[in-house]
Image (cartoon, rainbow, N blue to C red; front, side, top):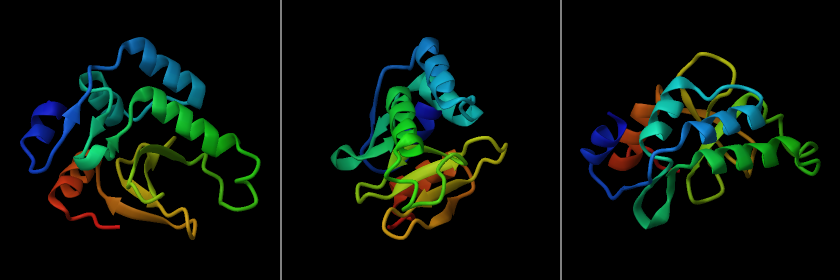
Length: 141
């Protein structure tokens, strides 16, 4: 479903092989919470989606766990930024800003974290809408 929906949108996308269940389970274990259902479903179809110019429209399960662990555990970030635990980063804007879902709350909204001012701003009502708006140019950062 996800690959068909995204492939039908304008813009360039490159799909990866599906994520094995073991990668999704490892990601959830490393993060300490399950992946949101929509994100897990997407990763089962494509373990990451690249947009135009190699932009990380959706990261792989491995990168999701790695990036989130780094942000959550780096002692240098603690005095600079609000805690990252409530967020589950899954993509980047190519300018240092990162896209996130809420990690432990059953709410489908997508937020963008601005690394320059530590703001967390609502950007889309769901993962599907984030993908649509990203590929149609509605999301501009």
